[in-house]
Image: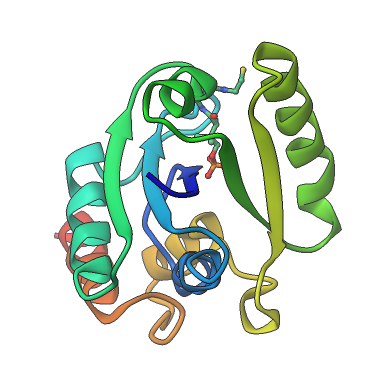
Length: 163
Ligand code: PNS
């Protein structure tokens, strides 16, 4: 079955930083499952279905990647899908404490699962879905920070909000 990693996140929406991580993750793992998971401490802008659809479009020509969504404990999903690795991206210092906490709780919950971190590409070091949404919602130009389809969807979403 090969080496399967689950790359979980809110992906609200998927950014070029995420895409970069998927591509680099594929150099390490045979298969990658991009998982739209539920983060109880975040309000979402796009529905789970919309987020999955955008990811599907972005990965359609990439071999070895699939997308799924899940509401529940991450480590249970990983176990049930024959994977043993969680892949996460690390940006500047601000990510560290939260990621450390998550990796440790996930290890406490299931010692068979390891979290592997990849440093985010330097071009994406200071971007996040949250900051991109914020900029787009005030009419800021976020072209180049997200895949073209996501950019078009952001334009639509925030134009609608103003009507
Ligand atoms: O992109 P995000 O919002 O930083 O991703 C966080 C996410 C969705 C991976 C995290 O909230 C998560 O794992 N949610 C599922 C519930 C869970 O297993 N939480 C961690 C152990 S309490």
